[in-house]
Amino acid sequence: MCIRVSVISACLLLCFTNVAAAQSSATALTLQAALELAESRSATLQAQDSVKRAAREMAVSTSRLPDPVLRLSVDNLPVEGAMSYSLTDNFMTMRSVSLMQTFTAADKRQARSVRYERGAEAASSEQSLLKAWLLTQTAKAWFDRYYQEQRLELLQRQRDEAKGVSEAIESSYSAGRHSQVDVLAAHSAVAQIDNRMLEARAELSIIEALLQRWIGDAASDPLAPPPRIDSTRLVAHQLADDINLHPDVAVLNARERIALADVDLAELEKDADWSWSLMYSKRGSQFGDMVSLGVSIPLQWDQANKQDREVAARLAQVEQVRFEREELRREHLFETQRLLVNWRSNLTRLENYNTRLIPLASQRVDALIAAFRGGKASLAEVLEAQRMLIDTQLDKLGLEKQTAAWWAELEFLIPRDYSKPTNSYHPSNHLAEETLP
Image 1 (tube, rainbow, N blue to C red):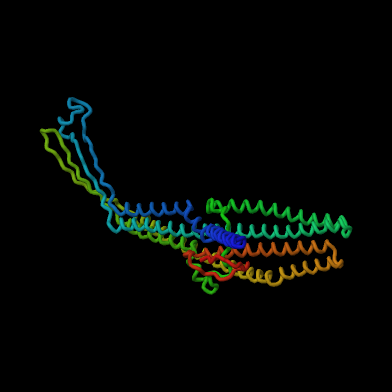
Image 2 (cartoon, rainbow, N blue to C red):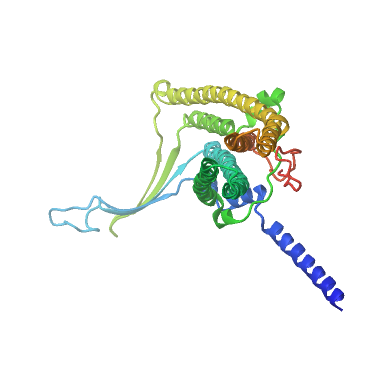
């Protein structure tokens, strides 16, 4: 009976453990989830939606004819003499109602509408630029928190080991096998790690606040394993073409289209808009009523020095945008090439840490501990080797954090659907890893 109860209890415990693990996995904050949260709650991106909507509303408005003008008037009203202020006695006094309409050519109205449509496209390009920046900053903040937590875990493990050494030294000191200097050195090693942990916790609080700025309260959720950062969509030999898709370049492409639309509109403005008016005037009953028909035509006497120069100014603005775009494209091409070189170099260095530097530092610690137990090495040498191991592991985490930040800049440099998987390796060699598209 006792055996059966024990088996049932063990099964229930296993089930509860699996359920808890599944819940923990379900609530873990992946990088992709953080990116989606940042995008969905971004007020900046929503503001750009409003800009696009405003431009498209104006595109419809400007495609219509100007509103007609209704005019009500009393003309030639006497203010002196026997007929003063009379509306009917003087044959020149008229009560008039007129309607005036400016007729803008259909192609000119279409050009004005296109100008605003180009503005909506520019707002969309700026939104893509802001989105790329938002995703990069969110990814960096997510990685910062992940690697800072890894740093704290590493320091905690090293503290536990240092505390164990300290307690062992104290026991040996009580037995007369070690000096008080060794005890103080062991305590000092623990205190130094405690100081590092205090600093790391403060940095983690700041990092969590930054992540919260992007994704809200979800910033406090436990993090899922990171995505692999050894590959990127950008290929070195295709950069010259890919860089043309950079959001900054796309914004200037949109501005060029706006400038060209301004050129078309300036050309069409050389054809003046005519305004027609019709007026009905009522006089006294003894006089006949009158009708007036009029047309207003702007006289463009000096097109060569006015309208033609405006067209030339618009064309110069097109050239300006094109030169700025080319300069920006060259700058981004260089920056991306530098990012790729640094990122690849860091991947090689991380491999060196994993295969050589950290294993060698660990072996040195093990060798000195064995020598210390055999009386062939001092405690100071052991503590120094442990400190060097900690520093090497922390340096590796710092390098991996920087590599992840550069990967994020490369990964979100060109707009894309980031739900598509592209990665295959991560230097930390986690057993369970998120695949970030």
